Structures are given as structure tokens and as C-alpha cells.
Amino acid sequence: MAEKKKRDHFGSKIGIIAAAVGSAVGLGNIYRFPCMAGENGGGAFLIVYIGIVLALGLPMMVSEFVIGRRSQRNPVGAFKTLASGAKGWPLIGYMGVLCGFLILTFYTTVAGWTIESVYKSIINYYQGKNLAEIEQGFNDSINMTFRPLLWQAVFIFISAFVIVKGIEKGIEKYSKILMPTLTVILIILCVKSLMLPGAFEGMKFLFKPDFSKIDGHVLISALGQVFFSMSLGMGALITYGSYISKKDNLVTTSLMVGLSDTFVAILAGIIIFPAAFSFGIRPEAGPSLAFNTLPLIFNQMKGGYFFCLIFFILLVIAAWTSALSLFEVIVSYLTEELKLSRRKATIYSSVGAFIISILAAMSLHNDSSLTIFGFTVFDGLDKITSMVLMTLGGLFTVIFLGWKVKKQDFEDEFTNGGIVNMRLKKIFYFIIKYLAPVAIAVIMVSQFII
Image (tube, rainbow, N blue to C red; front, side, top):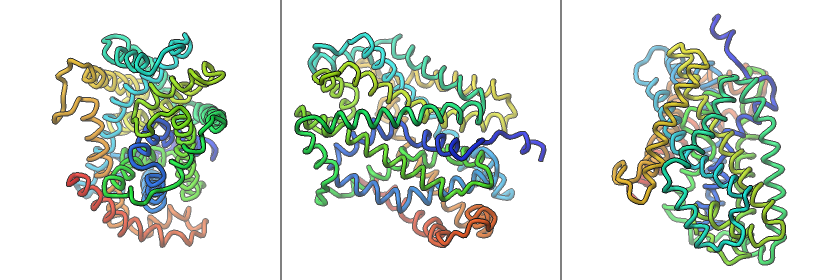
């Protein structure tokens, strides 16, 4: 009991929302969502994405919050505690810690690109360059040995600086500053994008669905994006849930986080697609939209220097808030299960992530032979986490909560000990116990078949 009393917690409702939204809102929303939507039919993908968020994403988020708060432990400790000594279940927690760590290793590579892009924006690197020159410059940067690793190291350092301070004085404090800043930047960029000539065509692409585009590939892509964007199946929400006060309503928190996350993804689409259509850029251009195409577009706008700079600052903030939750998964495990001090746990996780991230970054070199299952280390880590660890983690989490944890324990957390009269609990419990496991399993098998 003494250990639980010393455990750090979020200090306010606003802090919980800011940190949890910060975990969910990351490069997955601003960098990855527009890419996925552009490659999968725009409005059709958005409809499927929102449907999966409501039908699966929110119940799964509630599941992870319930497990975290009920146990008051890290992902491994949570399953050990709630499984009541039954063997096997803690493996789900280990899977979550491993998943969070592996995502962090390639996530920091992309985060390093965002810092590099901020630097390029400050020195006005993009001025006067065409798309081919910008793309070549980006490729040259990736193929350098030292510079990408420098930016990754900087990103890991600033993340570790916050993590070592703890939950209330670190993650919560900085999230309450970073998330409002991110929102203001998003709104500024949306307004600018919508003022461009031809912006309406981009809005049609994003919001007018062509249902003929919906197929198995779109469903799988949308599910993967929901998992990645909402931080599901990687231990982050279980960890954050363990820091949530018993007084706070988990369903309200989940709704606010889920809706905020989706809202930010849509805002990112409003920034990118009207701008892309305005300047005749293909919306399915993929990842190059963010790092190559948008600088070209900003370069042709009035005030482009300013808008380019704040866009990449936006990407850095988004990457930073999500990385904090990934770091916390590892640090909470090391401090609670291996009894390390928070400082040592932060140092060990930072050094470990940086070492693997070196392999991820160097595997992208044109002459690299670093591969995993035929993919570059970077792409291999992405595939392993998104197609296997996150979906398996999410699947076993809902099975665990629905079939192993006592129903009264679920209801006790869901209703805050009976204080909150939640009519939704029956619906959520039914989804968690029956629908979610079947849906995740079917889509997971389908992705390997396709």
C-alpha cells in the first residue's frame, strides 16, 4: 500500500485531458492521417475511420483506462494484478511495453525529420526551390550519417527532460502548454489553407465520400490508423489510466480524447488537401506531402516563410506529446517492476531507443542492407508494431477485460464506484466482450490475407 501512496498522479481534469489527447494526437494525425486518406479515397476513408473510432476505438480506450486505473500499475503490473496470479496474461503487458519501445525507435527518426525541417524553415532553405530540388534535399538529408542522428538525439533529449520530472510536474505541466499551442497553430493553418484558390476541391475530396472506394484495404488501413492515432494496444493508455484519479469519469475522458484526436486529424486534412488541390498536387502523394510538397506550397504563398515555419513547429509539438506517452510506458515498467529510479529508467530507455533508432535511420540510406523480413529496419518496425503488436495487444486487452476481469470490477471503474449513473455501461461492456474481439480478429486476419 505504501508504494501506491507514493505513486504519481495527474493533478487536474484538464491535465488528464491534455496529456491523454497529447498521447493520441501526434504525427499519426498530422502526418500519417492525410497520407492514409489521400491514398485511400479521401472522404470514403474518413467515413470508415470515424466509424471505427466510434465502434471500436472508444470502447478500447475505455478498456485500457479501466485496466490502468483499476490496477494502479504499469502495463505489465496491471495484468499481473488483475489476472490474480493466472499465468500468461502478463504477456499482454510485456507486449505493450515492447510495442511502445519499438514505435519510439522509428518514431524518433520521423521526429528528427521534423526538427530538421524547422531548422530548414528558419534559414529559409525552401525559398526559390522547385519540388525536385526539395525532394532531393530531403533524400540527401536522410542519406547523411551524422545529421539525422543529431536531430533524433535532440528530440530524445527534450523528451527525456520532461519524462524525468514525473507526471504532474513533467508530462501534465508541459502538455497543458503544448496542446493549446498546437490547437492555435492548426486553426491558423486551416484558415490560410481555406483561403487559397481552388481550396473547395480539396474539401470535396476530404468530405465527399465515394463509397465505391471502400474495400478490404481501406478497412484495414483505417483500423491501423485508428490504433496508431489513438495510441491503442501499445500500453500508453493503460499507463496514463493508472495515473487518473478515482474521481474522474473515464467515459467522459475517453470521449473527449477520442473526439479531440479525430478533430485534429480532420483539421490536418483541411490544412493539406485544399493546399494540395490549389497547387495541382496529387492528394495520394503519400509521406512526401508533409516534408516535400507542403514546403513547396508554402513557398508560393504570401507569408509562406511564416506558415512553413509554424507548420513544422506543429509537427514537432505533435511528435513530442506522443513520444512522452511512449517513454512513460517504458519508464513506468522499469521503475515499478525493476525498481529503478525514475532518472535511471529515463536514461536507460532513452539510450536504448536511440541505439535502435540509429539502425532505423541508417536502414533508409540508398545503399543500406539493414533489413527485417525483407523490409528496411524502419519499415519493418512499422509493420511489426502496426500489423502485429498493436492489434494483438488490443485484441487480448478486450478479451482480458471482457472475459477474465470480474464484471463488477469493470462496472465499479466504469461508474466510479456507482457514483456515476452510466446507462452506457451495458453497451460498452457488450462491445468489449463480444463485438470488439471478433471485429479485431477478422480485420487482423484479413490484413495478412490481403
